[in-house]
Image (cartoon, one colour):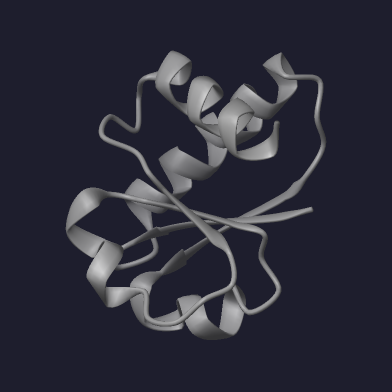
Length: 90
């Protein structure tokens, strides 16, 4: 399974989201290839992704995708990430 975490620049915020997504997957006892990128590169990096994690303001900029787009309100809320990933993967 491939998960892509995106933010505007692909550096800070997406890296935080990537790390916390990995922690959430650990809680769920699941494995995935989680990467971080910027919104401009999501079509390339996320072409084969099953899930794209992003903030509400970037959803419209993702474009056409076959991945499930999961909107995360608080990148630091591990419970929110775990709950939303569990729903998407369940």
